[in-house]
Amino acid sequence: MRYVVSYEDGENKTKNATPTPARALELMASNRGAVVMDREFGEAYDLAMHALGKMVPKEPDYQYDGYDPEGHEAWEARCPTCGCELEDEGICPQCGQAIFWRDNEIW
Ligand SMILES: [Zn+2]
Image 1 (tube, rainbow, N blue to C red):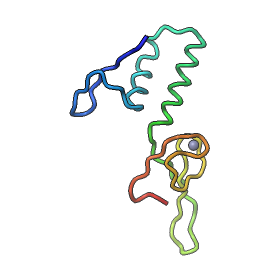
Image 2: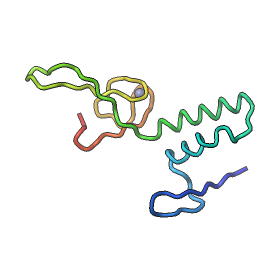
Image 3: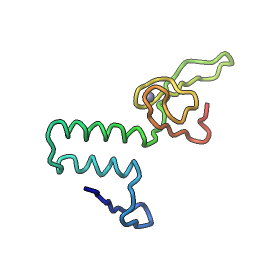
Image 4: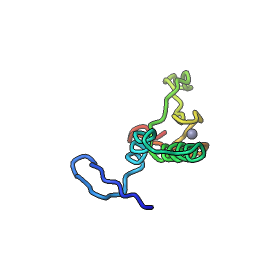
């Protein structure tokens, strides 16, 4: 069985479009209780939502790391999902979370 999802994306109303990962995750989360599923399918559904969540870029968390040798405050960028330290990766090398960097935040 094939499902075709309709949704609105901002200004343009798009019919029968493939949802973005963020929209697909929103749809799955809001319909979690409406879908009849046994335990195994429920776990598969949650696993799919978890995997989809890693495709939706998140900003890094910043952790204060004292002062650098020049006396400037130093901050570490960390993955918001697993907490590992990031340099400038677009995808966390440890857990696969997509990372969104603001233009002036590439380290
Ligand atoms: Zn991670």
